[in-house]
Length: 361
Ligand SMILES: Nc1ncnc2c1ncn2[C@@H]1O[C@H](COP(=O)(O)OP(=O)(O)O)[C@@H](O)[C@H]1O
Ligand SMILES: [Mg+2]
Image (cartoon, rainbow, N blue to C red; front, side, top):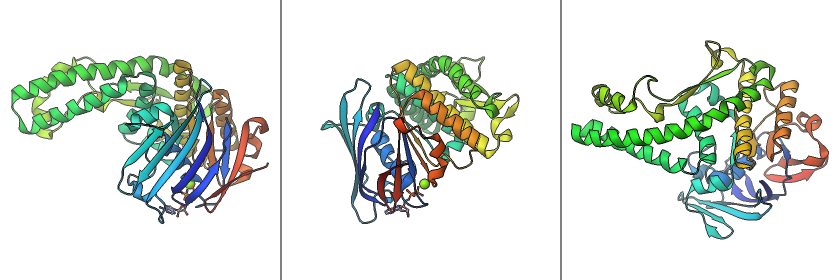
């Protein structure tokens, strides 16, 4: 799947601009503040209905406007074309349509346009809190298991109810939520573990592509003690959970531990190597997605050249070429990309004060 046309209005300094991306590599260069990340933000809006940089959509809408609109045509894997449009208003509402039919949720939108982003926040995958790694894992499960989204949202509702019961309700009510949470905890965990069976080997072969990552190991922690049934843990931890006011174990505490031997990756890798690891993680996920669904996700790679040396930059571009997917990569200098641009499969765009023009190279 790939975007064939993009029209953007009123996303930050992109007041009204359009581009015809190519099927594979799209290289976007321009000075600081020219609008490169805003272009990626616009594409992200098409997939998720929200920004990857701002919680408050009002900061994304151009100062002079009251709403922003991104319209795209997308060629899907069956070579059919869909038009997808997303509008966000100052009041926060999301309006999204595919071929004129209203899309009801951002999950539905994400399923239509599978997209991966690597930006400055992707360092969190390695050195951030477990929630970044859970989100990463869940991206993969969501896109291959159609029932996962529903199971995960039911789990979160039951978790909220149990946390409420811990604070305000008697033992009988707590038992009801213990049972419901146990049931959903098993469904969510089974989905994740099934996905991980394949994913671990994809990760390993991705790490093997990059010399500094060869010894990286991933270990999954499901969110509660390995040797105890979840139902028993909920009963045993009632007193401490009541004191804390929340459920201390479960699928909401799952994590991937990323290490080299006994040392955590974040304590050993340099900044550039950490960035490389984030790329390897995300690209491995795209490879598995392609194998399991026959589809290709779109990659947004913000400021790829910074902190990566020439060899690792080349390895990332080789990895992308093997994936044969559409990607949008930004950088400040045209020269950062020139040696990585196979003419037949790539396009280059220059962004200048919110205007995007295709250019020769
Ligand atoms: N709501 C907004 N309205 C208009 N311009 C904005 C808004 N938010 C940010 N900008 C401006 O948009 C420009 C582009 O930002 P950005 O896409 O982050 O640049 P780049 O990634 O090329 O460095 C910046 O100059 C920024 O000041
Ligand atoms: Mg930027």
